[in-house]
Image (tube, helix red, strand yellow):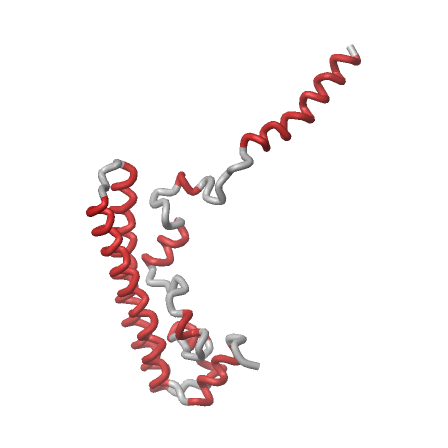
Length: 172
């Protein structure tokens, strides 16, 4: 009976190695084929539908232009006046309102693309049309977020902007 146990043990040890060989060409996207919208994670969809930044304002943020959401979180450290806080809240509300609308439009446009691929109904022209729609939505959404950063430059003074950048870890 010992040779049988030894043979089973050797067989079990070789299984993971053979299974690994089958997946040598496995994609880093493996598992994402189960998403409802393949090009967007559930977290992406949630972020877009709530008007979140989705990293679209990095060009402004990382060049020292504060965003309204973070300014409101740092209002004490920045010493915002009541008027500045009210202006920042207004910029934030307008940004978020527009971003929610445009974010939902982007998700809807990605869904149309997804369905076209799933149902195999796309051709070159319809694909181009769908991509134009998606990129227009993404561009509009990015504009909304970046414009809010531009507006904040008129709300804050120079020392507050400098302090913001220090607090966010962009300046010493």
